[in-house]
Length: 292
Image (tube, rainbow, N blue to C red):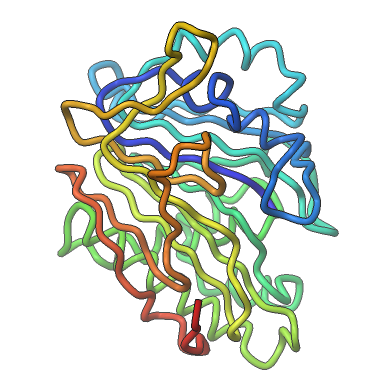
């Protein structure tokens, strides 16, 4: 499984997510706290939006471990954006390790990253690819389940062209989860799908915390109306912001008590005004009610 973080708020540096916090994404690449295997060294990726310069997101990724990439360490303090994503990868067994397979993935104005696995992916891959539009099929460059999830999502996103903003993202992601559950039903045995998926258009974002068949999903936390900074004494802190700001992360970046765990099989939805709410995932037909 992987680790990721998404930020929406007043412009801040990429280093405020990747390198500076006590439990930054780079720290999580070699010492994750909330998964059995602490290493996430099969590549990394970062994406950011600079709408004054380009309508589509920028993306930088590599197969080297995040902790050992000098380019990332050099770029992070110099990149500033109001929408930032960072991901460190632990490749699932049998999945390739290449630049094409590192997250995040981008298409037009959209960006997606995934923490988890599609159960029985090898068994459903051909059927899933047959269901894609020509445009989505031709977009795929790698071989991971995550990239195929995003291709499926882009088709569903086009299907919901009558919606806008966060509502369109929610509808497309809910459909995507439901379709994956339909495709894998009867084929995954006792192995669940884990679908923590983060999608954004640069202004809004939707992140799912989901697993099939009643299994506990991967961890996911939020922290609102804050941003990271050093306090001058060499210690990190999250401080309240004058403007709304939202963090969504696989693991808290700091020991700050304001982090909140997302409910199982729920979305966290952030609209263009950076208002945040939780909604249940309804597309996952085989999901069962869970008690925390």
